[in-house]
Length: 77
Image (cartoon, rainbow, N blue to C red; front, side, top):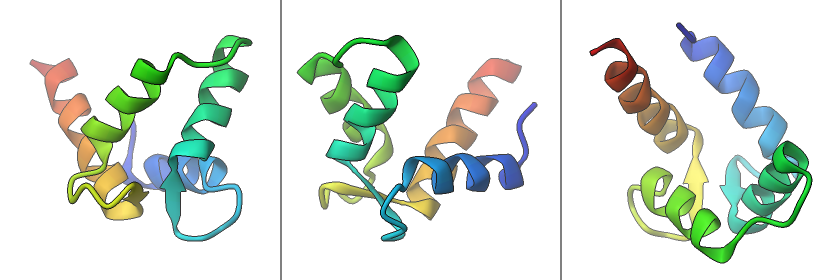
């Protein structure tokens, strides 16, 4: 199972401009690199809805860790 440290390392990798937030554009880049083709708008929207808890258009490290923590718990059960 992934640790919080691994979540933080993943966050830093996605946060390309080191702003302390993951933006919609960075999510699009991540999905493109992962799948090799541009992400569908719905895929980016779904990621942002799941991870951006306060709906400010960006994902903080705390939001990222919380969302991945929820996924980790689902995988356990």
